Amino acid sequence: MNNFAQKLTLVLSDSALRGRLLFVLAILAIFRALAAIPIPGINATELQLFFNNNQFFGLLNLFSGGGLSNLSIVMLGVGPYITASIILQLLTMLVPQLKALYQEEGESGRQKFSMYTRFLTLPIALIQGVSFLLILQREGIMPSLTPFQFGINLLVITGGAMLMMWLGELISEFGLGNGVSVLIFAGIVARIPRAASQLLFSYDPTQIPVYIAFLAAAIAVVAAVVFITEAERPIPVTYAKRIRGMKLFGGQSTYLPLRLNQAGVIPIIFALSLLLIPQMAATFFSTASQPVVAHVASLVLGWFQNLTIYGALYFIFVFFFTYFYTAVTFDPHLIAENLQKNGAFIPGVRPGGSTEEHLGKVITRITLVGALFLGLIAVLPIVMQSFTNIQQLTIGGTALLIVVSVVLDLARRIDAQISIREY
Image 1 (cartoon, one colour):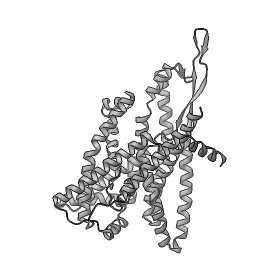
Image 2 (tube, one colour):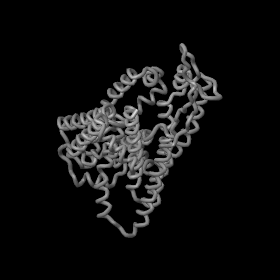
Image 3 (cartoon, one colour):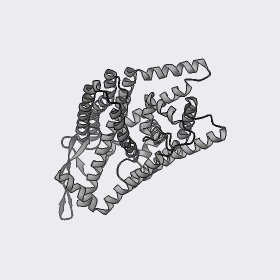
Image 4 (spheres, helix red, strand yellow):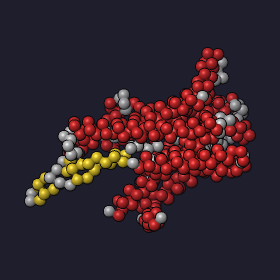
């Protein structure tokens, strides 16, 4: 407790760090204000019934930061930006030029990569906007629009998606934490009072054991996520002794910390985004005039409504994206090359290719543990839902994972900023 008070005092007393935190709070206030402005012509009663009976749109609402539940002008949220990021990062495995741009060309390369992501976000936002508007009109939540009205609404929600992307990048650059994750986190936290009030009003004494079990599981999940997220595998590193002039340099021993879960919460966000794409397409085509198309779309929706199939796909995607994102962000070749350039080596391992191979083996083994854990934690709420038949557990479990991971990431970044200033 004293340690927390000391850190809080340091944060509040440091003008630069305090400014970053206030900047994040100001951006979040703007975001929540925008999320409360609905597009015109909404049937509130139909909208509420629609979200209560549709888990798919409940998950989409998670990515919009709560902006979809009242069809706000930022109803698409950061979903198009996340989808664009997934597509481009997948392409880094296929296009060597993109991989070099992302990993090897430094800050200028990452800026170009971000620019390509922004360009791709726009057409994805347009496609998602058209799909949403047509689905909402078909469900009776919005009245039939003239082409001009449809175009205006499409322009508004596409502009809202681009604005959300910009706000997320502002948080990443001038604030603290990953901007996209922080915006999703803010939307989840903003829904807590509403969810708590709904739980109180729908209180059922016969469900008390279920509530207690869910609370115990939530506490256990939080503890496990904190433990795995903070777990590290230290790789010993020794700097060779070098003589410059009349002085002796090097000879120091340190370690290279490899986290058990290098990817953090990103695999969860990527996996959910990828799972939502076929569901959204199937929902759109389920009432198509062509019987074959409508039948295929209905089959896809049926598969995703099957908890066993959905849970298996969710686990596989989380597992894959944990390895994928670790491979994108951690390059053993670059680490080995930098160690060799700085006269450092891992005891018992030759510099260069042997070091690269050793680091690759270590990161593969520890990522296996992290990926399995993250996949199991991700599907745990689905398993609980299959036993309790409480639909909100799936969304609540995913939200819990994101909230805990984002809080840990923010705490780590604040600690890093404090350490830099103390040093």
